[in-house]
Image (cartoon, rainbow, N blue to C red; front, top):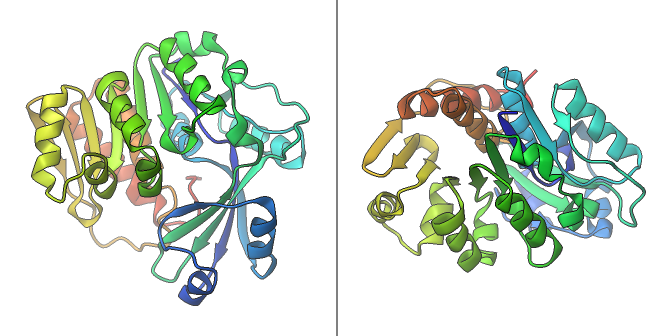
Length: 309
């Protein structure tokens, strides 16, 4: 297998809202907030659902990789409930091998409310449910050992059981890639993420805000210097400035595609990672990897949701 992902197995519930809805519910635009089941239901009660789909950051990337013709798998914890069944079916439909045996859990399958404002930005409220309770016993090491790359998400990293699951997976992997996921995530786990980036990851995906927060700088040149000294592969998306990949002294950049009709930014980073990793595992150049990532993210932002048809 080329790549196996481990991530939060979350069912995405997509709704359109206005900016007032965010303000009235004290939500910060373009971030992800963890909520309990009660708050999730309260937020959803006044909204019209546009679409429901199997999601989660790494799962979105893995599906994108499958759609590009790569042999991929996924590990993520769901409960044996209606959403859990839907989740598994959604992955199998996309030719993703699902390495998890679901059973009845005390918590239900996780869900993420994705709120899309008129400017196409997405703000997420996530009830992790059983997804956030992943532990080392949920990790099947055989597909990890038999995969070229293990792909992880920062969203999943937490003290306790998820950290043990992470450690077990990393110890049994051939090469490790990870997305830093979210600015709040980086700020919550900064020392741990910095240790991962420096000592355990071969490839790190981040956006400009996340990586600058991680190394405590306001100057992007510091990021380039940090990356060169790191001697690992660092891939950074920079919004309208495009994307950049740094590996030792090789620095490649790629501009964004112009004149796109942006509908929803959900999954832009996930599909960028899918395109980049597709190029990487198929031995394309660093420049072509960035171009493939940009092509995939350009496609996804022109539709609702984080999955290409």
